[in-house]
Amino acid sequence: MSSMSLPYSKRDLHYDNAKFRHRSFSKVISQSLLTSNIRHDCISCSTGKFLLLLLIFGVACLMLTRTSPAQSISDARNLGEDKVTVFGGTKLGKFLRKPPRLPPRLPPGDSKSSPSLNSDSKWIDRQQSVKKAFIHAWSGYKKYAMGYDELMPVSQRGVDGLGGLGATIVDALDTAMIMGANEVASEASSWVETQLSNRISQKGQVNLFETTIRVLGGLLSAYHLSLAEAGTNNVPKASVYLETAKNLADRLLSAFTSSPTAIPFSDVILHDSSAHPAPGGLSSTSEVSTVQLEFNYLSTVSGDPKYSEAAMKVLDHMKTLPKVEGLVPIYISSHSGEFSGNNIRLGSRGDSYYEYLLKVWLQRRASQDSNLAYLHNMYEEAMKGVKHLLVRRSIPKGLVFVGELPYGPKGEFSPKMDHLVCFLPGTLALGATKGFTKEKAMKDNLLNFEDLENLKLAEDLAKTCFEMYSVTSTGLAPEIAYFHTEEYSEGGLDGGNKSSEYVNDIIIKHADRHNLLRPETVESLFVLYRITEDPKYREWGWQIFEAFEKFTRVDSGGYTSLDDVTTIPPNRRDKMETFFMGETLKYLYLLFADSSLIPLDKFVFNSEAHPIPIEGAIKKE
Image (cartoon, helix red, strand yellow):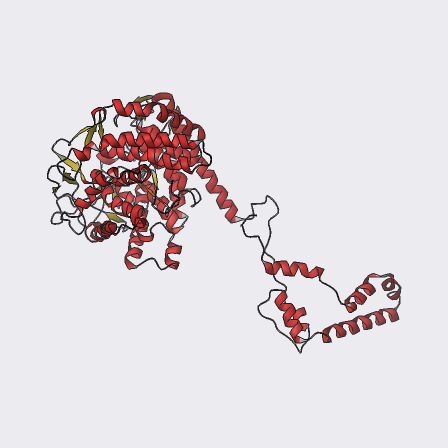
């Protein structure tokens, strides 16, 4: 029996069924008089008419005087009425009372008169448009680059830029599963099952961070989603994903075990499980602190704690290092274990350090491990530092943005904001409500003043990130934007859309005008829509998707990055990054989907948009 509520209440049932109640003798007499042949005989003369009216009047008086007040109230309660007016112990009140209103009902199949059904249909259609785009992207990759890391759609060939592990395939696998793109999922899965393990054992140098978030994360997400699908046929397939993930992670562990400190080396040689630091010995802060979600989950599902222990030592160590109001430089040395330089930013090399402070805490906070509270404390302190040191407003229209401190807190502030920083609105919103809707969080009294302030900042920054798109001629954002402030201004470097309200607030330098099909803005729109339920985030996402379709789609298959978003037509760069299928299209699909699909209170998304289950939130595999 369905648990869905019926389109009417019990009150309406009582009212409808009143017509079948037992009728009194007087009602039977009056009804008979009105419907029998007597009526036809009597009304033929004036005397008959008079007698008929007199009889009806008498019956009415009898009805009004024979029911007690108590019975009237009882009858009214049976009708589901909360308030009853009783006049002189009669049923006059019953005659005067309006019957309960039945809700309007739509004719079968008639959705035109329902705005909500119209709206649902619109977003289902738009969701399917994203799915079609995903299938088009895959068609180009399959045709011209199958087995390579990335597609070059204009020149119709593949290229290995991430170690040769077929990164696009693994990145796209869970997207296909989530979308129900079954043919794509089958083709990607078949390649993983038959090719990936051999690639892992034979390939050379890979980057620890990139390989972890894209390939290890993709395998682990596919593992979970396979088990979650109905039917036992997926268990062997899931087992292949898990075994392949362990094979890869065992080799990646050498980055941790080879380092003299808790900070891992940046590069791994897969075929001999060796590792070495980057030239100069420095690693990106974001890279060494953005592997923990994946290694933690692998320990959970494999039963082997070695993966989590190695990865969590990084954050344990970083807890002890000096910071500037919770903010950290973008480089760290694997030889000394110390931060290097003073450059502080939330763009490249800094971004996901802050993201994973929150997400690793969310992932494991139900594990009864009180030692992880330090991660949430570090995140909260860092967000206070962001608000104090990095947040500014542009002129003349006052867009809120996050700048940089390239020379530390004592140096000059730079009004530069990478598109990468647009992850932050989603992270702030997630940190405020812990994945619940704002309405539920408010109802359950889960939000403090700091949370509300962070949620407001998230919405302001999301607005800015969207305007970085709408200010350009193509409707697509540049890789980097600068903001007009009292201290900084450059003329002749607007985005090209002269009708934009913010054309004078955003400055785009010639070297920064490219677009790489990045996901960060649509990621934040997805999270903010889920949390605030404000439809404007869906509308913004649709505008961005339409711009991708118009300017980056390649007819022969795939989508391409662009050289300059401020000119039409834009020159094409001939590259489809793996994250376009792994992240950008996935987040757009989820933005237009029902909120029950990959809910934010049960999953955290890794830095490559691979959903990882929150411990204790989902039935254990």
